Image 1 (cartoon, rainbow, N blue to C red):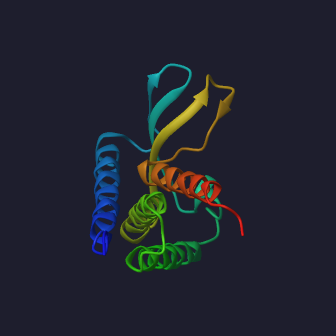
Image 2 (cartoon, rainbow, N blue to C red; image 1 turned 180 degrees about the vertical axis):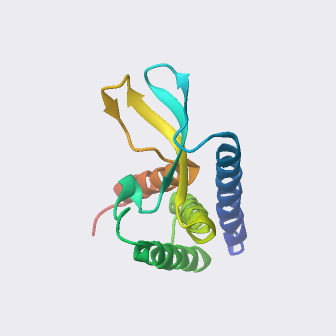
Image 3 (cartoon, rainbow, N blue to C red; image 1 turned 90 degrees about the vertical axis):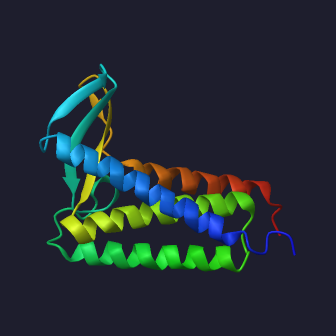
Amino acid sequence: MPGARSWPKWFALAALVIVLDQISKLYFNSRFQYGEIRPVVEGFFNFTLVYNPGAAFSFLHDAGGWQKYLFTILAFAVSGWLGWNIVKRRFSGMMNLAAAFIMGGALGNVIDRLAYGHVIDFIMLHYYNQWFYPAFNLADSFICVGAALMVLDSLKKPSN
């Protein structure tokens, strides 16, 4: 059966996402002071170093520590479900790509939570000093791209 053994490549891609994410976080954590901002594109894009003990957009950042375990369990559960569906060949190629991105991103952030108690963020988008998007990292970017690919995949399928 064609593609019957194609699942290892999706897990390898998820592992590559984790490696790229962790290398980038180690770089910024070792070369920036906490809160330091370095402009890349004036008025639009900065590198910075901030820590997020919560989830996206610092959701539950001040919850007292239990959220680390909740988000860790959630990341393992979602990654396990996605991985199982890849192995069982229930997903299209685009959905496998999306799942690999989401698994790699989610597990990259889990590593931070377990190692440091927070997630390392370093990308800051803004419009001069009037509007700021919350800082994020490569793992977050891969999760968002994966989610967008899932939406695109669902749009190409006929509804029942």
